[in-house]
Image (cartoon, rainbow, N blue to C red):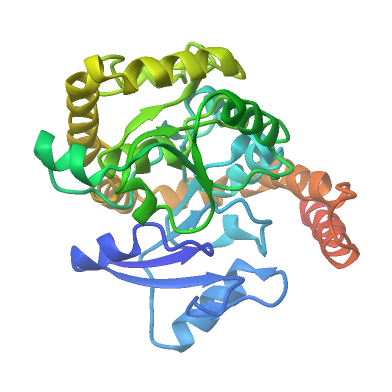
Length: 346
């Protein structure tokens, strides 16, 4: 199978190629097969791809929290799949999704934003380590508790305060950049999310043999207890923003009396992630989705609904055109696209 993928992050590329599939990437970076320098139609991008001898079977839009540089996806003559990850901070996703045949949403509580054909497709671990003996685990993991990530992200203004307060009461190693070497030396990764979502850090930490101490916002569809079992393959979550509880929990699980329990939870978490929440596991499901869409000929249904769908898709670009935080060139482009959709509906 040949997959045309949009997005700066090469989600599943390595895994797809290992299964014998081919991937052609388009996005706003030089590492992509086609670097997008401006907003263009999906058909234009497809034409470039095909002119280079790559005739795709399916199209995958892999959300990397960047702004869309493609429009007119609803016109593509091949199955189109949208993987929405950062739905919580991108109000246009729900409208934009109408351009696709199928939607995968990473955060369970976001399902109501996608009334079209969709399924919960949680995040995953890119790397999964081998199982370690207790002696090996205790010896190599000389960092009791760590965090790897950005502290000043505009989508998570509370993070810097949280970790600053935590560090005042309990030692923690904080850095940014490549998380792999830090996770391989850490016993606990203290996770903090933007809005209580299950972020990549949850899965990456467990996949590399750490116990993950995450925050929790109990909702019906999306809290860490829906996927992991507290005290079995995940540490019990602390209430979101509760520094005192996070300190108490970390001290408890790092105590000498809890060394064996901490190790067992870390290894059970690693095992579960390897089996059900790795990039490989997600890729196997993704391929089945592609095959199903091809077999059911869903493209014809989407093309037949274009007029009604365009009314919704237009709202995505109208929304983006009103975002004052965007540069003038992009907002002008989005406003122009919204007008084009209005014209197409007439």
